[in-house]
Image (cartoon, rainbow over all chains, first blue to last red; front, side, top):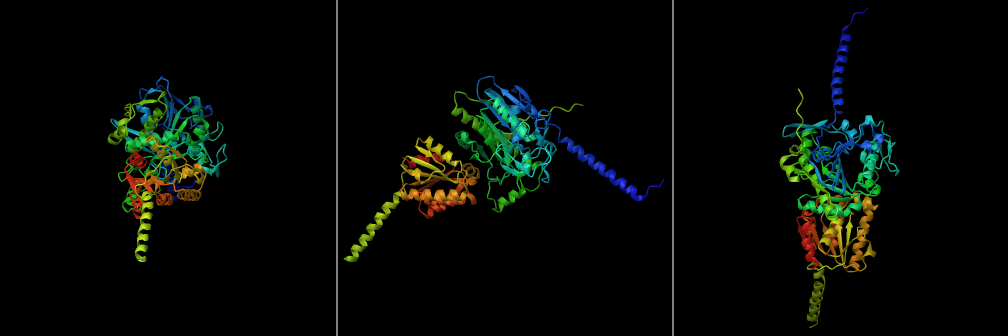
Amino acid sequence: MKTMQRHHWTAIGFLFGALILAGIAARDFLRMRTPDLIIPSDGLSRTGLLSEYAPDLAGTNGDTPYYLYDSRNPGPTMLVLGGTHPNEPAGFIATVVMVENLRVAQGRVFVIPQACLSGFSATEPLEGYPERFSVPTSSGERIFRFGSRGANPLDHWPDPLVYLHRPSGQQLSGNETRNLNRSYPGRSDGSIMERVANGIMRLLETERVTLAFDLHEAAPEIPIINAIVVHEKARDLGGMAVLNLEFEGLQYALEISPQNFRGLSHREWGDGHAVLPILMETSNPIQGRLRGPTDVDLILRGVDIRYQTALEVGRMRISYDAEGESLAKRVGRHLAGISAVVSAYNEMYPDSPLMLEGLPAYTELLSQGVGAFLKPPPPVQP
Amino acid sequence: MNIIIQRAAIVLLALVIIAGIAPAQGGKKFETPVLVTSAGQSADVTLVSMLFKRANLAAKPAPQAKAGDLDNVKTLVVVPGFSSKGLGAAGISREDELKRIKQLLEAAAAKKIPVLMMHIGGKPRRGQQSDDFCKMAAEAANHLIVVKQGDEDGFFSTIAKDAKKPIDVVDKIADAAKPLAALFQ
């Protein structure tokens, strides 16, 4: 038997080191699969999974929880989606704040905080995004995942070169196959996102949803930020909401959903069902191309040194608040937007109003922060 | 004697011209019925139509109005602001939209229909894509109503000042209701 030579020991050392690094990476990788803690308010009537509406989703990473708040008083039914794009945290957190605070006095509200559940288990390659962020509450920190725009590639691989939207035949870049907001109306036997889209369409139909929201964020340089995008049949509703919001000092642009851009919630929901679809966008610097350090602070405070510099030297052609775009502000805008649309809806249909209670006002979120409206994490068991 | 008559005629002619122009550029009163159109297909046209509705003024929203829609119209309201979603929804290109607005404004001028420009979208409805629409509408308008954020660089104020057109700069969209009502009194 030959004796071990020095280079053998070196190789074993490198292998051992690689194993340790792989172990650390694997631990982080698997932690992305740990579900986020969401603690519903006392007003919750029922929780369940989307597969109740689309059985093909059962057992997949697309089978996301829904939360139902039913007043048991006759009225309209509303659906709110967060986390359609898991790298847009204000939409996700706004729905978590809803789940943890909402009470419904008249009508019903479905909330789906993580519409693209699969996307919460991976981050976007080459973006340097943090895997999670924490929000301080009155007693401890709540930790949430920061995911990717589309579904986890492990749930759909490989992407085609060209994504063919069905049934329209519209062609988009292949990675849009994993984008929930290009997958409506979906198919029960399609890709994971088409199956989730199909599940949401079935929920809209089965529950006869009247008003539906899809909460998003976009880079500050994208023209459609701080905007409310509506299907043409919700044009007046959106217009009234924008004017109502202006009275609160919040400026929103109203946009009408293009009829020839298929697969989006604000288009397919409205074309397929009687529902009035609303999509809302806030400005999120961590998605911006100009951004500097990409860290948790940028998610929470939304102050970016590069955008600040551009603002100071007068090179900005876009809206960017020098105080930053904090998570509290962005969540506040989403919740204020929902309240304004609901108020406008109630003005238009006074005989059958939707009455919501318990949601924090925009000014409360700004002054107290998001954590003030999240339940503290349960104590760790010894 | 001839020189005196000539000078008197020139002065008289000037007075007639000034008298003719002054109402169009100064204290012009606008009348209903109103046609509200977009220049750039932003949904701001919906909000402006709501302002008219709240002011109890008869206004027909026609985001893609053409010259033929001006029959029986006494005021044309143009709401400039580019929207890629809006143009997509309308299925037209930016160039087509510029052409439509140019033709519509020419038709309004030919029919002597006064034009009111209302820019309410603030900064998001300014910039490279929007400014061609803003300039075209502002230059053709008899009166401008602008939400302040859209005039931070003095774009509209300068056009109004140079052409001696009246302009109302308001803080918020809802504030536009007041000058709007005054114009139609």
